[in-house]
Image (cartoon, rainbow, N blue to C red; front, side, top):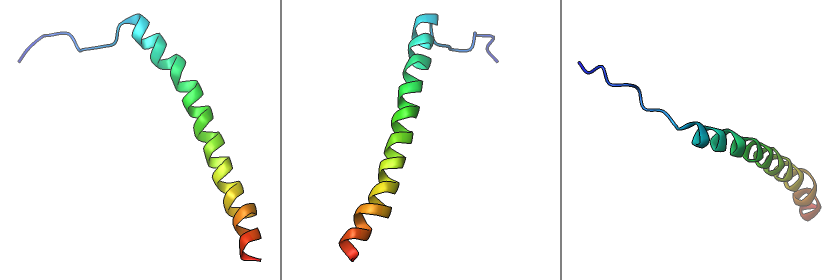
Length: 48
């Protein structure tokens, strides 16, 4: 068995990773909201 250290991100890379996660989470929420809008409003107008 090796006693090698566990691989990990550098501090700068870790900061970049967490900095990018917030906008990605926001984009996911926006996409989910737009999909719901299309299903509830746009597609209902087509079916009428």
